[in-house]
Each structure stands twice: as C-alpha cells, then as structure tokens.
Amino acid sequence: MNLSDFGQFLSTRRSVRRYQDREVEPELLDTILKMGEKAPSAGNVESWDIVVVRDPSVREFLADAALQQEHIAHAPVVLVVCANYVRSMARYSERGILYALEEATIVATYLMLGAQAAGLATCWTGGFDDEQVRDILKLPTHIRPVTLLTLGYGAEAAISPVRRDVQEHIHQDEW
Ligand SMILES: Cc1cc2nc3c(=O)[nH]c(=O)nc-3n(C[C@H](O)[C@H](O)[C@H](O)COP(=O)(O)O)c2cc1C
Image (cartoon, rainbow, N blue to C red):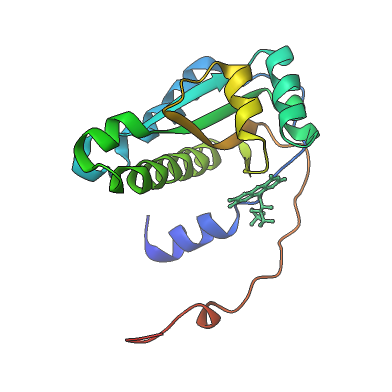
C-alpha cells in the first residue's frame, strides 16, 4: 500500500450507526482482534483489555448506559476496549494511567481500521456512564472502559463530515 492508497483508505472510513442483520463471522472477528497485538505499547506491557460483547441483552444494557444510543443495541458486536491501570502503573506509577489510556485508544484505532479493511463498519462510542458500564460488564476497579466500539456490516452510506483544514491544528516550532 502506498501513501496515496493509505490516504484513500482513511478517507473512506466513516462512523456507521446502522448495521445489517448479519452476524460477524467469528474467524473474521478473531483476525480483527489480533490487530490489537500489533499496537505500540509503553515498555511493551500491553496495558489494555477488551470485552467482546455479542449477547443482545448485554448490548441493550450497554445502550442504556450510553444515553440510549441505539446503535449499540443494534450492532452485532460491541468491543469494549479498556485501559488496564494495574499493568501500566506497576511499571510507570502515575504516568501509567496516561499510558494505559493511550494504549487502549491506539488498540481501538487499530481494531477500527482492521474492521474497515475487512469490509465492516464501526462507530467509536465514547458517550457512556463509566460506572454503569463497569457494573454491566463486571469490570474490576483498575479497568477503565475507553470506548464502546460497535462493529458490523454497515447498512447506511454515512455522510462525510466537514473537517477543519489541517493547518488550523498545526503549530510550527512553538504554539
Ligand atoms: C472520543 C470519541 C467519542 C465519540 N463518541 C461518540 C458517541 O458517543 N456516539 C456516536 O454516535 N459517535 C461518537 N463518536 C464518533 C464521532 O461522532 C465521529 O467520529 C465524528 O462525527 C466524525 O465522523 P466520522 O467518524 O464519520 O469521520 C465519537 C468519536 C470519538 C473520537
């Protein structure tokens, strides 16, 4: 893949919130999950975990915990990508909190792009109540859910949002 192809690949990703009534093949899901192994990791401690949610009743509960966002209940798979504070703080103390959040974010991004390469659609979902998600999934206290990444075969042609020009974000040498 050259740079132009990569840019095109990124340009065609959209957040998709409607999904076909079609399961994601388990082997395909496993292949996508393995993309997480390829992410960089501070000290290679891999301070992240994923709860794979397929059970419709659990997805309903998660949708409720996420301000009734229906795409969570409708997507056949929800990947709850989490930061594992214990693993990173054992090595990096307070700094480990940031590293664990960064790693979970990178891993979720790899999965999101891996899913796209597999012809699947995703929606990064960050609007949820941490404590409700923690209760539903029985997460230990040192595990923080970072995103509910919905996954499935898309059923809508999502619209490209207007973006700021990248130069609005760029600062040369100093702010
Ligand atoms: C940190 C973060 C949190 C987000 N939370 C939500 C969310 O709770 N619900 C939702 O529908 N989309 C959510 N999104 C998706 C954004 O709405 C979406 O990325 C944005 O509108 C740009 O559209 P695009 O992804 O198609 O480029 C979130 C995205 C990010 C990066």
